[in-house]
Image 1 (tube, rainbow, N blue to C red):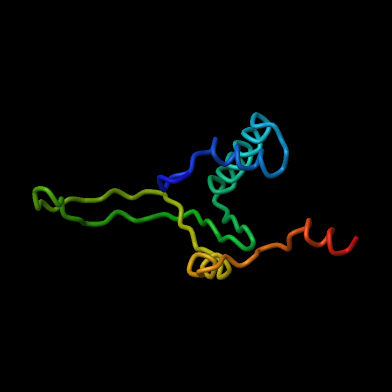
Image 2 (spheres, rainbow, N blue to C red):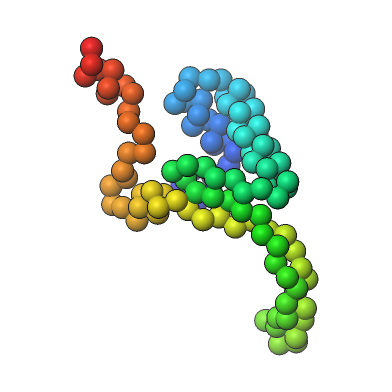
Length: 114
């Protein structure tokens, strides 16, 4: 995970480590989650993940542009895309030196409560 890009397999491996699932089951979970997210966005609905952010389907109108190589005027066609707006908590975490804890650690609560 050091090159700046994380693959679905790396996510599945991390889930497998943290939750004790097999990598195969974790990969199915990751694939199902992304598939469901895509279905929601394709239906035209926004997808809000609390404490993470909101994905919104977005239609961009055709517009005039300039080809940077030739300098010629071109028309950029209309298209659908997705916008992402991070939650305030995610922004805070990204900008913090020390990562704030999103959810309480159950293990530390169980240890102190026993």
